[in-house]
Image (cartoon, rainbow, N blue to C red; front, side, top):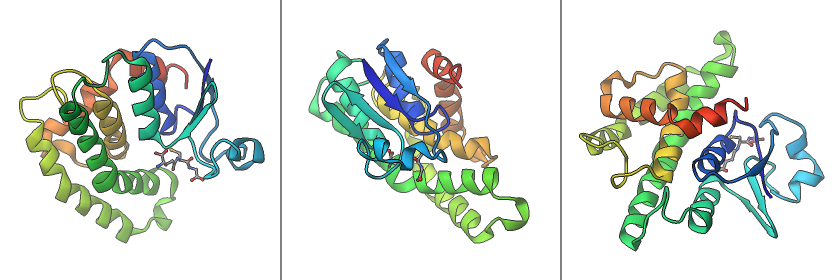
Length: 203
Ligand SMILES: N[C@@H](CCC(=O)N[C@@H](CS)C(=O)NCC(=O)O)C(=O)O
């Protein structure tokens, strides 16, 4: 059976959301990002970076969230959450990579600073830079999402699961998405999906 290492409170939630959408059985090993297990030899043999998620499927051991998502839909999706043409697949990857490269670090910085750093110790420079980078890059996504339910094509794909999850970190700590209503609506609809609710129920 497929094994997913990483708790719901980590990027493993995206992997689990794909598994739930595809109705695949899997074993959930809820290692926390701050837990000691992911720095021990047994886990480091799976992911030498000592980070979650990691996926084991038979002889395959895989880490890096996006690689795992692509593997799952490519191997098991039968078209679901993925696409049939090279052009469509490239578009899905374009939006996922855009979120990873332009937005992920800053959504995470905002989340970590506001959630885990006591108010008096927060680094205002990190917070201001993160807000500025989100302000700078989100208009592209917001314009693209005008009149669209999904970020790529006309059905849900891994780009929706991945992108909306990452941006939800900023939403959780109060980043002002009102200035980007299409992005706001997209995040809200994605986090309400049935598959995501099943993942949340494992928390
Ligand atoms: N680019 C990696 C990032 C993995 C990552 O940073 N995971 C976090 C949890 S979401 C983690 O395990 N952090 C623990 C650490 O860095 O020590 C991916 O997408 O898989």
